[in-house]
Amino acid sequence: MSVQVLEALRRPAYALAALGMAAAFGIFFLYLNQFLFFAPYFIFYVPSEGAGLFALDVLLSGLGLVASAPLWTIIAAAIKITDRGPVFFAQTRVGERGRIFDALKFRSMIPDAERGVGPVQAAEFDPRVTRVGRLLRATAMDELPQLWNIFRGDMSFVGPRALRPEEIDVDGRGVLAPLQAIPGFAERCMVPPGLTGIAQIYAPRDVLRRHKFRYDCLYVRHQSFGLDLCLIALSFWITARGTWETRSRKF
Image (cartoon, rainbow, N blue to C red):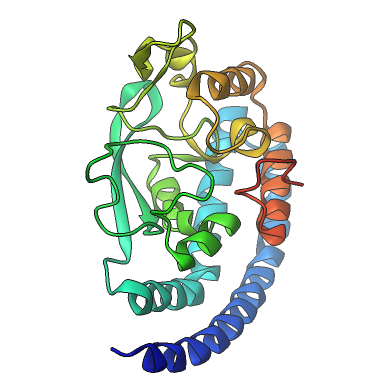
């Protein structure tokens, strides 16, 4: 397909994207009214805080799946127009207490991005990230399919980032080591992994895992319903600003 044809396709795609985003926000605010109606129940009448967090996850992920439906079609079309590769990307991740599950994402890198390099974190200005992928990652839209993981109970809205079991990192001596050998790994696995969290908000994406684990352990020790609500609100603000990929302050 020629460059001229691709450009001709992209222009209506961008227009459809704008219409889809407007529709998504309209649906979101429609369901937000229902959430606000039921919110007092989840805050004041749940039998325990853990049950309240679970109820919040199920409610928000269900509403999010419905509200974001128009965006899924637009994002899928944009990915296909870019390189005709697969739309979705599934990776094995470590969940609560070491349980393994498949995390879903919109593909933001070139196909076979790990060929020759293995399971490494994406660096700033990583050449493997596609043009559409940069926009998706800056707004965290690449993680929209993980709403299904939250609805299924694999993940929570807030918690440590779900990591891959085969990942390695540098330990305190500067030696490569599996994540399981990094201090804080076991403690962070005591809670479900999250779509957002203290580490995701306050730490740069490509900082060493052992530094992020300190943020994760801080969350585990101070987890609460109110903290989760604050982190979710901050995450929406960062998404609106499109600053998830910045190395400086995100909000």
